[in-house]
Length: 90
Length: 314
Image 1 (cartoon, chains in turn purple, red):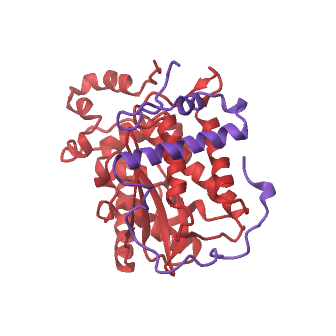
Image 2: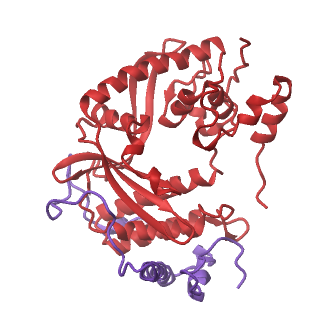
C-alpha cells in the first residue's frame, strides 16, 4: 500500500498493522460506522503497544492535579442540559 | 523615523474582522495578535497587517483549531447524553471529514511531519480516553450547551481613533469545576514537554485575558486555569495537566498594564510607526522576519512578497 501522507511509523520498530494505515486512507464518506470504530480501536491498540514497549504497561493517567473525591454531578451554571441522544452531532 | 504605509484593509482575512472600517486600526483585540505587537511592533506590521504571518494553512494553527473543534463536538455530544464512545465517534467522524481532501479524493492535511491528519486523529482519540470520566467537569451555559469553545468580547476601557470602544475578544476552551473550584481550561499542543508547564504560562497574556473574561463575561471568579498540555511526537502523544494560578491582584495589575499596551497599539496606528524591537529578534528560535529586517530597506518589499505568497503543496 502506498502511503502518500504521514501515517503511523510503527511502535519502536514493530511493523504497523495493515489495518491501521488502510483505515487511515479510506474516504470518510464511504466509511461505515463499524469502520470508524475499528479505526478508533486500532488507535487504542496502537497506544497500548506503544506504552507496553516503553515498559509502562497499560495507558497511564497524565501526571498532574488529582481529584480529591469522585466526580460529582455535572455542574449546572443555569438550566439543565438536554439528556437526549437524538441530537448527538455526527 | 519614517512611517510605514497602513493598509486600509489588512491583507490577512484571518484577522480581518478585528479592524475598524473607519480607521483601519485594530479595535477588537485577541491575545495572539496583541502578543505579536508586544513582542515587536514591526513584526505585528508584517505579520498581522500585511498578512505575512499565520494563516489557516499553517499546520500548527490548523492542528490546534481542529483539535479544539473536535473537543467541542465531543463535549457537546456528552452533554446531550451520549456515552464516551458514541461522543468520541462523532468527534472522530468530524475530524475524518475535516482532514479529507474532498476535491482530490485523498487524505489532506498531510504536509507537516508532526502536525498532520494521522497525528491529529491519534491525538484526539488518546486525549479523549486519557481524560475519560474527567474530574474537571465541564460547566453548562444558560443555553444548556456545555461551556466549551465559548466566545467572549468585552470593553477594554480604551477608546480607538474614532472614539469607538476597543474590545478584547477570544474563545475560552472550557469552563469547569475541579475539586469544588472553578477553573478556565485551556488546551495547548506543543512538540516539547518543557512548554507544557504552569511556569511557562506564568505570566501569560492569553491566560490572564481568559481569567478576566471569565469574570467579566460569565460572572464568576476562576480559581485559576487548568492547562492540558498535549505533547505531539511522531510516534506518540503525551499529556501533561497542570493548575496555573491567577490571583486577583495579578489580574488587576494585568488589566491596568493592558490598557497601557492598547494605547501604544492605537498610537502606532495613529502615527504609522512600527519600530523594530531588535532585542526580540532571537527569541522563540529566531523571528521569521529577521532576514527582512536585516536587509536594506529598499529590498524589503520584494523579500516580504516572497514570504507572504501562498505556498503550493508539493
